[in-house]
Length: 283
Image: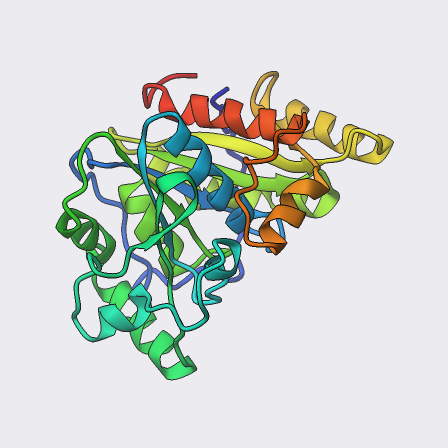
């Protein structure tokens, strides 16, 4: 279901860029391909794992999928069992090289574009560039020549950063990831404020709030899930259950959706893929 985000009184965001540095939202034309952005304030909520699973799941639904990593931590190659040192978009961008030669084979026929290895100076140079050019990502995506039937899954770094704002400029759907804990619940207001300018646009993306790795055997986790639902409204939260088999599959470089054994988490992921594959305005 699409979450109806409620907005609160203004509170400061400690790590927000200054107004001079932060790209201002603009009303871009409808992008093709469809773009799904994975976002969170906290780290460790499973964005890269979900990006991997969605790449496989949406591909199985007939979408041509590209999983794009906008995180300088460069961890996605591990999830897809790609070689260390796989060329990525970080260095390619600094060298004014196109991204069309960077795509690597992923699970179930999807394509993967990793961030790639970069040093601190390269990361600082790229971030400075991105702050000055809010259309950087949109331009690179347009040059990939992807068509309407394609979906791009964008894995962004945790927090309020220039990579997330680049992704939000082109997003059709934003999936906000959280865990069923107090830390994630406490950052919900910050994420709502961060998304507010983009959700106010005429061509606003839809926003899904996803509680990931839910442990139904934990009374505390279920209580926290209830608090999320109270905050966002009934039906405003999607859930993926905890499943060690998914982590184990990725640890061995295997498609997490290939397991034939019954898995509640796999069912959850397939359901999320069907939701993402529906019309952009669908609830």
